[in-house]
Length: 485
Ligand code: SIN
Figure: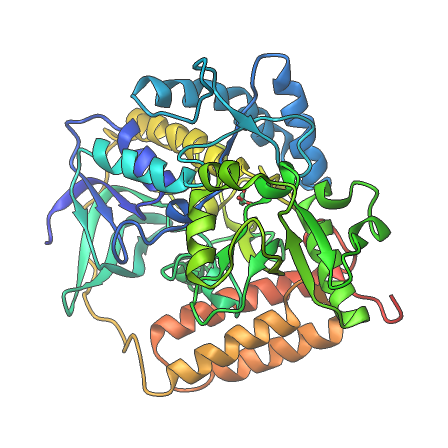
């Protein structure tokens, strides 16, 4: 496949698919998916889509987002998210999407931590991401090339001309007038995470390799309530909406210790709950559980069917059983630096949207359920900019079609070592000594004879560690552990 496309979109989650939906039907667009299309973070999103319930709620949604973001948000980005969010979601509903409603036909809104009111729309109970993904796939009018690993961006003189890919055992180039990165975050660089198995920071690594700016890479969000005691790569998330609707966090003696850390208890912002659980487990040596006993059984099965089913498969009968939980990596606020139309810093024709992007809309800590909304809102802006600039003249440039080995013997062991290193030294609690240790080891690994895909993960990890080393004070999700604290 060597033809010229109008647009190539890397990634088939909400950001990629909604970009596609927002482009004109007569364009020649190709979507690239690394695996099955559903292997993306959108598909596994449980909680929902945060959106202002009415005009009066817009400034409150803005305030909640800024508060969670701990001073690092771009106020313009937040303004766009919260003002354009209701418009885009209304359009999505007009396309025919069905969020959950009550018997009278009113939209149901749930609450999650750090939201000052119920404003999270959901679908299929706790299957919001899956429903949205399926719906967007049904609306997709362009082809998808599956099992396609992007190995490089084709860039010359600060302009992007396409991507190099590995597909069907072949390396080749795909040329396009506009290239959109919508490939998600960095989950697989951490040992414990909630992300789809495809999410492994490849595009962030390519950007690091090509000197394209990454920003706020120290800002990695850990979700507080994850069931990590399974051998699955993606650990089972227990949605924040459970706590929003009454679930408690307790230790093995039934004590709600979160109030020792913050008077908002279970409804404190995500970073505070994660850090508190991690700290309490370390200090007390006690196990921590999610207690769902406040839910009536029949209601629970209907409202949280996926969690009910998945946990049942793992031997837990909800809402009766206590579920052991731990924080796990969940979401990257840091990413590829872009402006508010998704234009990648200093590289013409290249866009980024969704979790891969850093517009600073989430600042130092993302407000729960703002990410699906971000995918919807900013993809529409990317599509708009593409529409306005697609007809601009572009040179034809040809690039060679070779790559060094993508995978080498021994990579798997090093990959696992990296995941452990990042979890232990660049995870929830950080300190300079351990970050430095991690950096030294990553630098050593980069000098080994390794495949390109591992190299990309290492380059992304190095950016995370270096950014963490630069930020000397705790802020949002970046928590520095001082000795004695
Ligand atoms: C959750 O359901 O707790 C996840 C929501 C989110 O990450 O925004």
